[in-house]
Length: 224
Figure 1 (cartoon, helix red, strand yellow):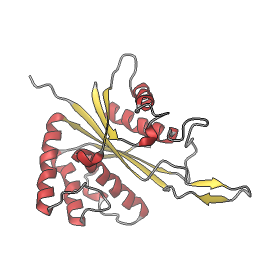
Figure 2 (figure 1 turned 120 degrees about the vertical axis):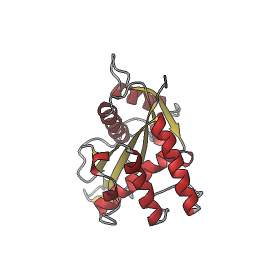
Figure 3 (figure 1 turned 60 degrees about the horizontal axis):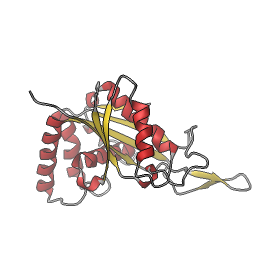
């Protein structure tokens, strides 16, 4: 009997920083941080992960593309083919989009290390919890980008992992078994997450409203 494994690959578009600060006169000053922050989760079991890897390698070969797949650098036609994989093999995709001009929560924890960001922790955990609940996941693995801000006082992501485990698991339901922090450059499934995040961003900014429409509505879900 095959022991099927379950994976959630997460990537993001934008950054979790505060977009404005208030000067001594009470004026809003732009910080350079993005207005939109988008997190995208792609759920795959071990069988679909194998198929996905082969599909992406075929597209890479077709376009002679050896670099990391990024929504900002790939040719438009290649972009469309990559999004089409989601429909072809039936990949559930979940995303959370935050307009930071309307966000009422905290961006950072007062007094904590500079790299720790509760905004990132909270929104990512909400995305993972929703994905895990919708897919009825038990003992899955979450694969996430190695962002330095997820470290607290240089503890090699331990505090972030503890927060995520605590937010998603319960005493009796172990939805996540492992959390792996990786460089997305070496993980095709995470690069596909980036492509979806980019398509979502392009739709909401008006840059390209057609890309996200390539994904069949039954495969993509917005988390509020």
